[in-house]
Amino acid sequence: MFDEPGFYDDADLDPDAILLETFVYCSRATDDVDADEVSRLVAFSQKRNVARGITGVLVFGSGVFFQWIEGPPAEVRSLIANLHGDPRHYDIVTLDQCVDKRERLYPHWEMEQVAADDLREVLENALETTEDEASLAALQRILAHLVAGPLQSMGRS
Image (cartoon, rainbow, N blue to C red; front, side, top):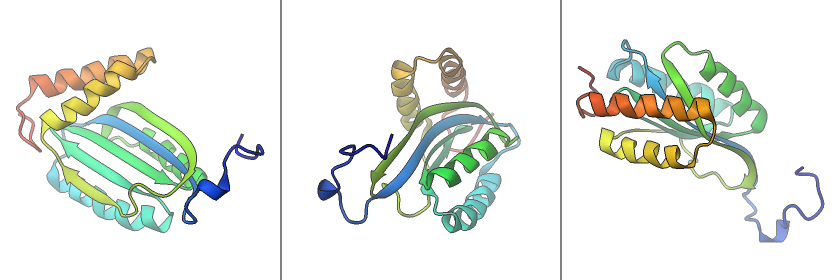
């Protein structure tokens, strides 16, 4: 698909644009994931993913992960496979996945802690655009989790 003549007009692209795969997802953390575990995860990810050319943003609040990952397609696909086997989370919902020739949106790995209300808005928007039945069901479970629990930024009762 990307080898088709005229698919990209290279004259319009920034010289720093490269072929990147983007993977955006949300998931529910298991009960044993806390702020310390997330800090360890971020420290590990910063070392491993940057070495693989993967960057992005990880948001964690009220027991829900939201992550934007971008990097070389083969590396991102390998990371996606690892994410699906990670026992620290479940109800993984793919919000977006694509391959584009562009500049990185997140050139540095970052970790943000957000309030559940901010995360709820992102998930509600995803719920409106998702057509896959399994993803719809998982998003609804994640949103119900946010509604049922206290809105402390990192806590669950």
